[in-house]
Image 1: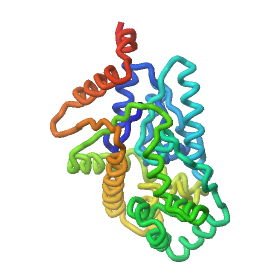
Image 2: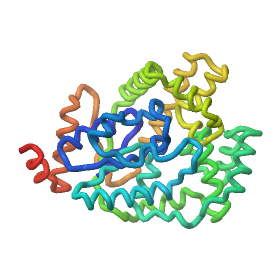
Image 3: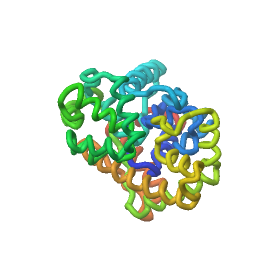
Length: 316
């Protein structure tokens, strides 16, 4: 089972609700929650929540360690085997659609391995001319991917350029091939909110993150020596707070930029998941009680996965 959707749509909340009713363990499909010390800005499940329900692929890397889709794919598959061996079921939860597709589909990841020298060359070019310059390079060889990747997303821009250099093909071609075949059978659930309500949820979460100490979290990372040029420190929110700490923006401007960039990111996430033909969209918001959302998902699970027996046993 997969719970997907834009950021701030309630994926983790729904997963925890379902974990009270079904014998599941959660595998995070979030490209930022893997990093230790990056808790507030990634909206990571709390220690209490993780004690209540087993979570996988959270806090497994330091911010300066390498991480790839291939490693996500391998670690997730191992976690799934272990979960099944315990007589439980894996629930993939997250908003990184690229990771989810790589796991669920027969996704070719060996056709263009990493090229450290090329990556360093591109990072140097980004420092000299800016990430937007790399994005313009990508537009020339793979306009489809360039339209999907944010101009500040240095890591994914470089990977797309690296793939094109190695294969002579756009990385978007690989995504098209992957849509045609499924390696794992899964129930896909997507959370869909009215755009304005989602924007309000994003703004509320950003302000809450600042109240919880997001600025201090980023300051701690910088004081530990983690460079602002690391892919992890370029993540949504962390780049903007780093700019604030370097005196490049005010705190109010920092919050405004995070809200704006997060809303844009959420729009791209929804566009990505909308391409999944098997997605079951769950309507949220618009006055609909959350209990109704959970109830609809329960019924889908019962009907499509046949887990009603487990519900009965857990409620006895």
